[in-house]
Image (cartoon, rainbow over all chains, first blue to last red; front, side, top):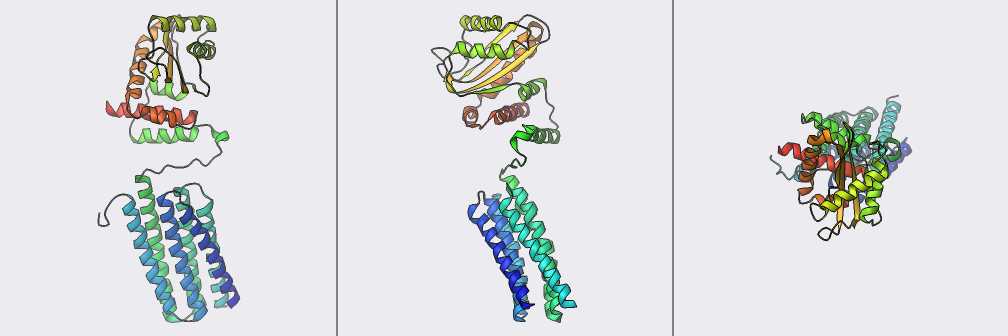
Length: 88
Length: 278
């Protein structure tokens, strides 16, 4: 049972490497923003799986906070890309 | 039992996540990447969180994971939408997906048509000619006469003429006065006998063609051949071409364009600007 969770995390690690490849390679700014957005959500998955593995439920709180923060980050970056300020 | 259902959901979610990241790497442009990645990752994350809620069965984890899943379901598509809009507004283009040999230039024309419909723009006859007329990219450097020989070979069959006749007409016209109206552009044009015929052929000469002492390095050649009754359209085409060519950055784009298809598109886009300016 536990092994299956470990395996899932390994697959997520692989997925995050794929995302990281896109962050580094680009080629345009929106490509990178998309990849970072996805990496944030992969991290949410990771934290959620840690909850199962450790039995500590504060990891779930981390996941929740991260999901919201990465959303705000993506929106801010997207706005910045358009050349607007965040409150426009 | 709950554990198994939870594990199945978690693993299903992980598969979705992996597929979305594969899409991030494999797909050609930002829009398709958004399309594959955000949707699949939203699904995957929600499944994982749901699976964990079922798997653990403890109250606080269920509450937090369902809440997180709910937020992800709302925020991820919103973020994707914002990114797509900003990408569009910052001028990123849609990449061609189908193999070039399969479709020719239809996709770009369809997109242009969509734009036109959106802007209530009607194609006039000149645009139709721009879209369909042959464009050639001259790799080698030609003399004027060699160029006219080529033009004649291409156009004579369409006009029911002998190639030599057309070539001589073009050369005669050139001798009367040079058709290189600007240092880097020439409009060779002749009126031929017959009725209701009009042909246009365009050359891009990166190496330049020597037209006259004033225009030794002509990069863009627009050949217009028409019959007498097309006189009005003939003049309008010349005027339109002159407007297009007169723009400052035209030659930068003209020489930078990658292929025939891009040249067509460039001319059409410029022609559209001309309509908007009217």
